[in-house]
Image (cartoon, rainbow, N blue to C red):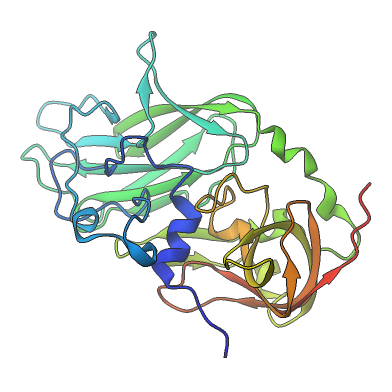
Length: 315
């Protein structure tokens, strides 16, 4: 029987290290303290077994004047749109900026409150980017019961990219300072004939619900791969404390730490191998049977079963 990682552990692997603030505070999009945590930017697990502590789960949101809160300028008696990212900072030019590595998703949460400070529920909020970077989520969605919507952007080009979030006539902006990731120089290896490209897998759209589960829209191309024998090229992210791994993640870019998968849920595949595969940090090629993970609460959306290591001829 295959062992499944707890969904929360996998979720933390996909989002925590690369986006968690140094001071360990819980980022949140709320203008006022909210009783629930924002799903887009969870804390790094600190309790035994990689479980979040009760204190972390119940952490309160920062106030509206927190340094990572970007507010719109509302009309009199109009709604207030506030954007949050735990790494946002204000530049000397009064621009709100988020540093992000090229190819790494940045998650931005918006909350819409009315003039009385109450959540605006069911309002459509949309996101656009100045350079049309790929989105990890839908381009528009309705606010939930606490007036929140979370968006994910995965910029690929170095330089600055302006992200604009709109809710009716209200809008707020934040700028992504996209930094070159030299570790991505491997890209193009998955262009080998017969290998499923990460670009294809990243076509699926993923949205985080308030309860940390994933709302996934698989692309038609990805659905056509379900149950098929495929080959993948990527990097190993070990999940076991052994020299040979029978259960690990194959990720689209070199991992910077155990908890950080730059490609997000669509940029990682959970791998099960009958025979252990030696831990290595160079790109590897795997063959196996490709499965889509449709289970509620799962932290990953792709799985490779019966995986075997294949010879990879580097260019």
